[in-house]
Image (tube, each protein chain N blue to C red):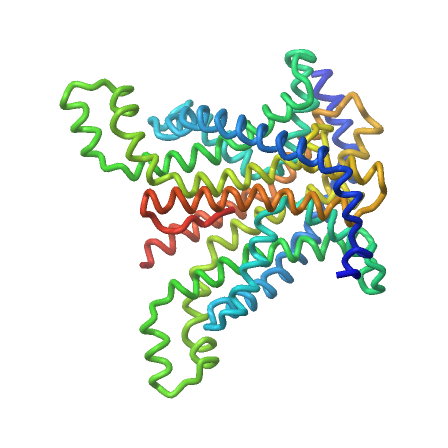
Length: 228
Length: 225
């Protein structure tokens, strides 16, 4: 084991354990907020994509194509430099980062939700309408509960992607897990300890998600989730 | 009108820079996809063999590369490997970019190839073996050609992911499209938004056809079956 002590300075990592813990908490928080927001807006974009082919459908399609065909980093820059021009310096870095990530993740969530909603048989809608529900009630009480079971594993996969995407926010000076690694590196100039610890922390969160998805899969009795 | 003319002049002055960057982005993404596909295909085939140890090892590799952001992987390759004082691990940024992006690409390709091989009906292999083919012959002549068709749509999607990931390489100072844009903006801070929009348009022109191809290939596969 002594060669390992030569390679990795454990004491140094212990010194920065608090910083990394803060980084983990920040990353999980940001991911969670973006997850909830992108699901919320994703429902609307999915509905736009399922509407009659017109201006609304076109807008949603163009939005999805743009997000899918350009790098996240460029999208982050566009929001980071562009948002203040539109509304002034209303948000701080972290909030701006959350907005950018939500804008990026929403189309992916929308596509997952759309696939789930489309997989619910039409007869379900007809049946709900027949008992006197309106469109909204049908969606909320009949379609969505059935769609959710189908979308849960691609959704977990997208959550892993989102979790990894938060690391890019370190480039616009948002403090999160990657930022914790960069902070340790700028203080100590030891690359191995800084970046290895960062990687291990990300893996720890990833493992937690794997375990959660395993439990969910067993509950639903579905096929195993293809994460990330 | 005035505004249009000034923007057009800006575009004319920055375009050569951005095109240099696009060329590097193009180059690196092609190299990474080729090397990553070869490595991924080999690992994907190995993963389907009946060896416990092999598939376990490959799964560890997949989880390592799927469970960490590409940015972290890039820092590992660019900063950590050279600090181990092994002579052949002394990368400059270009090599670090190729190495990290290849490994990252291969992690996607491995999963695609192995699941495509699993999707080929088991009877095909049994039939090949009963004709007197060895395991290797059955793979080479019967299974892989059938699996190859299945890999086309997901491979196109992976290619888009790789192109988009090259933007991250700007953080290690590699002069690809995003980095060239940042440098240009230092010169023309007033046109920040305009230049980033131009860059987004360039990425779009590179990625969108590949995305369309992926969707086309997917529908073609569905109609074939």
